[in-house]
Length: 180
Image (tube, rainbow, N blue to C red):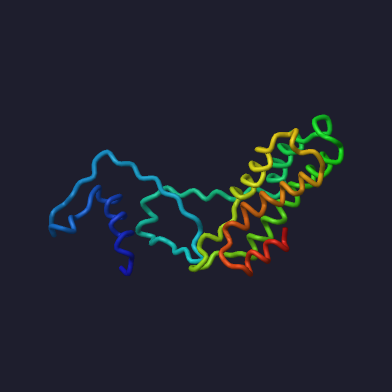
């Protein structure tokens, strides 16, 4: 069938409830009380699709990305609540209200430019990166954010940590630095 051997063994285990032994040809090994759960992303960028014969063994769910407005609502309301005008100075609150938009734009720009390839298969930027940037900002005690410059430096540091640390060569890191 031209399928990878591993995929075909998994298909056989799911469909037939066992596999033939590779050590002793003709000997059947039954799998009992096993549950399989799998996850994958769409093929492309160095990722291959699995054969339809294997795919049919699963119940497939496609979870689409939320809209930019929904993402802004999620992270924006959290940061605006944490760094609200009553808890911090008005200038810090004003800058904090703009961080969500800046982070989303950086994430979208990075996702569009730094696509995964077989050599850079880990260049996958999803909502997890957004949450890591904000989680890093939230780890700083509110009292340590003394002014808007410190908040921006903290945001830059977290953005470099989350996005820049994935990048493997100097030109990619230089591009990301200029994007930030």
